[in-house]
Length: 389
Image 1 (tube, rainbow, N blue to C red):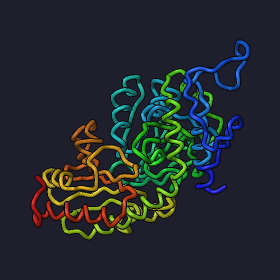
Image 2 (cartoon, rainbow, N blue to C red):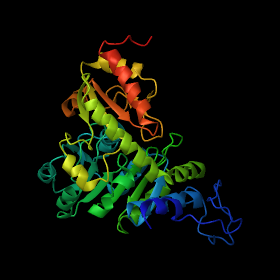
Image 3 (tube, rainbow, N blue to C red):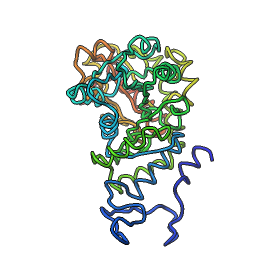
């Protein structure tokens, strides 16, 4: 089956009792047992639940992995993975431009337990080669990165890591499995915030891990059960519902984002546009190689500084000023003041998260309305229209 068919039919069959076409929500904490320790595959919903397990199975199939696990958030997936795989003295290599929550957890929590954290620019695979140490346990990648939309050559970095028996993980949230499949490039683990494109409707929080094979399955399953960062059945059902239209939504996100990126690139009030689907993106050829399309995220630097950036945020009417991304509605945010506020200001400046950087999550509204909204807001910061009161 092809991607869009898998999203609708994999692990999802009419209910054998009632014939219901849509999978039921098994909103239960516990399950009856025929005898002590004898049950139908589930005993307690923290350890497993039919609704949650269906979602995990579909995600594994869409990513081309063998095992899937769902969590209460993307950070919950990250924490569980790190608890399962790292011990004091291990070395973790991370891309320097990552989600603020990843930066916060690894530097403020994981590092306290003796894990050495090192951030490097992974746009050049040779930087990874040079940074590897005898105690390196994992190379952790984001591609595209958050918020600068840099790409890493997943296959090349995975090849470097595998020569030294080092684990690899890719946060695939921005691309989704519809645009990019890291496991096909040899990666061991794919991580998602299912809150974003997979859920797709800004009404649920969740996370997931997909494993390439059996090698890490026992450790992840044990720690998932032990730590308890599991999602509830209703949230999983909502995510499963959203997942059915992932392919259709991503086609719309990508088409509109490309059109808006092209428009913004030629606007006098914009200094720089970051979008992998543009030929001007420094890794555009890599994007064509490992992604199906450029994605639904755009970052821009407006001409000026924080004042102009704030004015743009206040002037839009269709875009909503809010954190998160990947929903059907378009969002706009200021990384330095919002999603990446926990990153040290000096580090933010070093990696390019400047005060005039704006991140756009392009929804599935009519692109003409989105373009008109940006046009009128950019007129305000250009001084050609009055500011919104």
